[in-house]
Length: 69
Image (tube, rainbow, N blue to C red; front, side, top):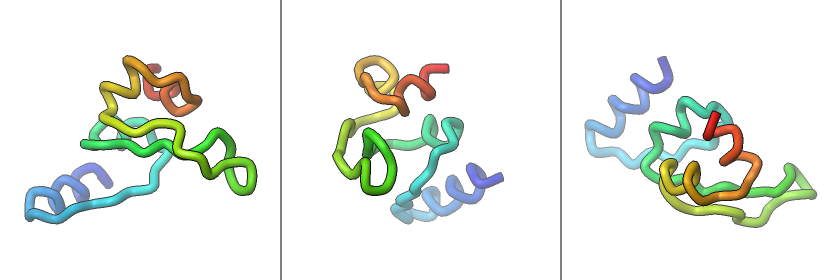
């Protein structure tokens, strides 16, 4: 359901920025910024930027591993 709502916003010309861990939503993104390698005080570094396809093909991050499944 959230994908339909996001798609509706985009079709109306809006830019949408989403903080998300759901891989189905991430695969629909135009661009991903992956921040890690951990959360909270253990994270905060940009570990990847690019499209979902680029991430699945080239990234060696925890997020990329889950996106490939």
